[in-house]
Image 1 (tube, rainbow, N blue to C red):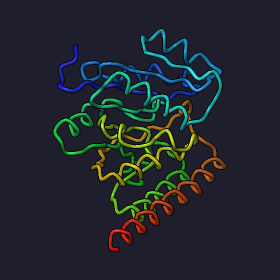
Image 2: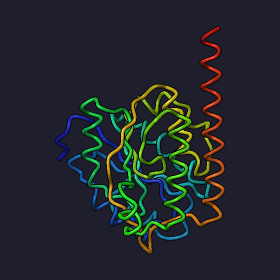
Image 3: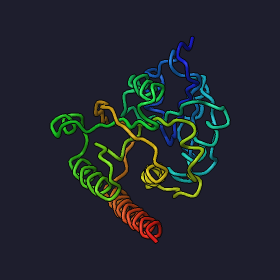
Image 4: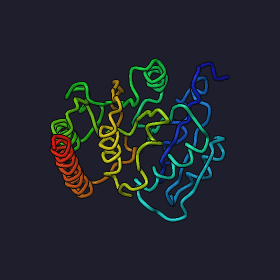
Length: 246
């Protein structure tokens, strides 16, 4: 029985997550969460069948539309439930869902409007947790650039565990964002532009053989698009400052 003061909905953007889905769901406390929604992006395995078996609410893309497109459906469906807080967590078991209660608490107590689960505490911990070295280095580089260009001081921009106050998602045009992986960064820049407060809390690094991950080539493409998005945001904000002074 839910014993908190907010209606909390968890969304799982899934693609071929059969091997890790059940482990992820078992770590989500239903004392905190009211509903778990899985959106399947054209999986070729038994993700959808397993999700129904686990009692999740399920929406299906009958063809693969992309990570960003998956999240667009996730947020649209979740907002229809009229929640107070929406939690997005990748169903690949890379993120410890037990920290959700703390993320909810930070929002409920008014400290943050958005809370990110950060895997970056020390280089040693990250690498021992299984994150490939090239992913760690690119994560650090991109996060540094995004902080510099946005004026933020977040420890990780590229996490698959995020909590949002409902009004945050209602106030940004997430449907106008990319259907690819850069969607996550675009959302954060939109949130910063609106002036919402973003915080982060530590979450253990947990890479495994059956955890999903994009390859080096796709990571490189993602990095280039992320930097382009960050630079575009910076110049947009500079132009706003110029117009305000006129």
